[in-house]
Length: 160
Image (tube, rainbow, N blue to C red):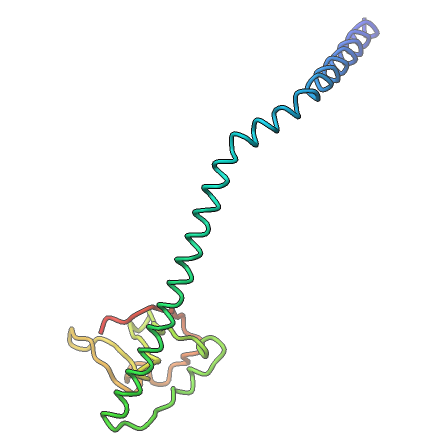
C-alpha cells in the first residue's frame, strides 16, 4: 500500500512539473508583444511624469533663490539694526559653539524650559508674566544648566 501511494505521488509530481514547463514554454512567444503594448500604453505617462519633474525642479530652484534672498536681506537688516542702536557686535554664548548648534541658522528651542535662543539677535526669548520677553542674557532659571546636554528642537521662527 505504501509503495502504491508513493508511486501515485511521484506520478503526480512528474505530471505537475511537465505541465508547468509546458505553460512556461507557451508564454515565451507572447512576452515580446506584451512588452511592446506596455511601452505604447505607458509612454504618455512617462512623458507627463518627466514634464512634472522638470517643473518641480524649476520651482525648487526658484524657492532656493528666494530663501537665499530672504536670509541675505535679514542679515543686512540685522547689521543695520546693530548700527542704528549703536550696539557692539556680540558673539554667541559659549554653549552655542558646540557640535550640535554651531553652523545652524535656525532658532534653538529648549522645550523643558520653554525658551528660545535667537542666533540672529543673539539673545533668549521666553515667557514672563504671560508675555514674551527678549533678553540678551540667559534667563535666571537656566543659569548653571548644561545646555549642551539638553533636549532641543530647531525652529523656523519664534513667537516674538
